[in-house]
Each structure stands twice: as structure tokens, then as C-alpha cells.
Image 1 (cartoon, rainbow, N blue to C red):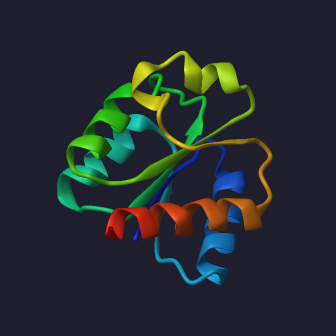
Image 2 (cartoon, rainbow, N blue to C red):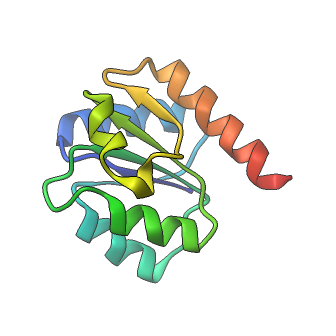
Image 3 (cartoon, helix red, strand yellow):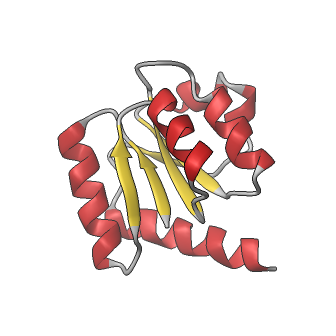
Amino acid sequence: MVLLVEEEPLAGLDLGDALREAGYRIAGPLTGQAAALDWIARCRPDLAVIDLPLRDGDGSRLAGTLRAQGVPFLVQAHDAREAAACAALRAAPRLAKPAWHGDLVHVLRQLSREARR
């Protein structure tokens, strides 16, 4: 299950469709950090996509929770400085927005392989 956090509803639906076509089950799109943290309190995703900026924070709480649970994630941002500004997000793979769906799927598959090692 891929947790998809994207504040723009249409973009989230588009990303969700692309990931479903690639064979992933999707949770979301959720539109903010609080909604994602609430979902994580009840379920554990296998992977996550965090799209910046978030309306309700810089993503550090979400990234910390995902790391604590051992959930690999990637960050998408229009501006690389958004992800670099948050220490909890710096080590995560990043894609510049708009990212090609193929690139997103490639990075998720790579994260999944690394997590199984």
C-alpha cells in the first residue's frame, strides 16, 4: 500500500491513477500532514509519496513517523529548497514537480527493493 499525500486534489487523483496502473494499492490522496498522520495511526503503508508544500506543516512530523515505522518514502516538490529546508526530508529521494509518472514508479520500485534487503 502506497500512502499518497498531495494537497492538490486533481494532481493527487492523477498520481493515484498512475500508481494503480503500475500495480500499486493506494491510500489517498490525503491532502495534508495531519490527515496522513491520522491514517498512519490506524494503518501502516509499505511506501509513501509526500508532495510538498503541505498546507499544514513542512512534512517533518510525517517524515519522522514514517522513518520510525521503517516506511520508505519519496518527496516531490516544485522547488528542491522546500525539501532541503526540512532536515527530516533531506535524505529521502526527491523528484521535481511535475515528475513523469514513469520516474515516480521507478523510484518507488527502487525503494521497495531496498526495503526488502
